[in-house]
Image (cartoon, rainbow, N blue to C red; front, side):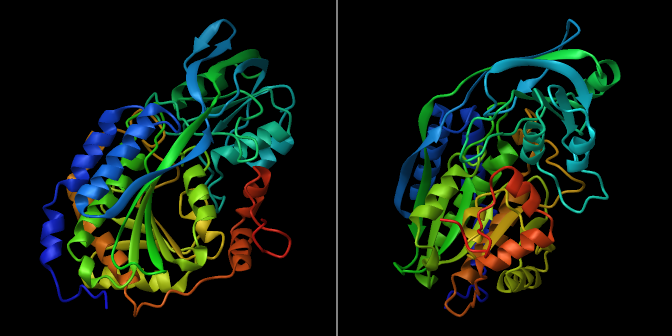
Length: 448
């Protein structure tokens, strides 16, 4: 039995370890870890080596092809006034002009009612409080495409002079259809005040060539057919260090690997650690791995993405009752607050597994309000994180993974049709269908 409740020595070792934080510093010091670029490869190699040094076996990088995107310059010309912006990754290169239209939050009805065709439209990164779900950037972009917009402007709702980034494009069509840029809240407010109804021009320069990415992985525990998958993503947007998103998650899973390596003889089930590439451009790495993996052998997924900036872990269980029970056991054992949600979260590397009914946690940090805060901006930097939080969370995650790897822990699966129905009930299916990310057929089976 993988029961660590009688042992506490590993807790002190983990809380005083520097393995994870050292790796986090190395990752942020790489600089640009954009998907398919040299810094991403350097990050993958750092993680591979850190897993091996932690005591894991078979540390390696599995490569795959990916659509590359390299940033050039971008600009907004508003009546001869240049406004600062950055291109959204996988925007096409080109120049587009038209009347400037501010669509506010950019909800579906805003596009239906607005004067979109042939114009440059701006939307906020926020979602109004009365809307029960968060409407993702990509969904807003494809509403703009669908309604014939000439260009797309994505305005940060968080003040601080920070333009947001974030990919556009789909798996089928990786490069988007119209130029797309991000602007700060302040630039967005100025454009709304001074340029509505006037002609503006949006320019994006970039290079789009095929390249390679990869997934760094290694294993611990017995060589069982079944496995618990512990994951994160190594890549980050090129405008920042990617400390929170997702150096923190990657450092956390390596710290967990280090802790479990000292307990390896007590594991009942193989634990495989995977740090994916190319998450930020459409969950490419985890999609590749889900296609390669024996999904029936994956007992559970613990995916860690954007934690450490807050002390409390947020565990999304996607309606798997046994995962909720595991989260409750964790909170009770350590008398430590853990936030849980059963809502579907289709935007990180657990998702290519959960769509098939594989039990999966999405682990992040609890945050107030909507949106990413510093995430997806140049302010996602190391000094906003605390090593204490990483160590505390690594203790909790180690205990959680050990619980899931226990042969006595039952982890029931769900039918894909149940996941599809939950997405419909939560009004998330609409946006997924708009951007081409809906994976189900009419019967709720996963489309092959």
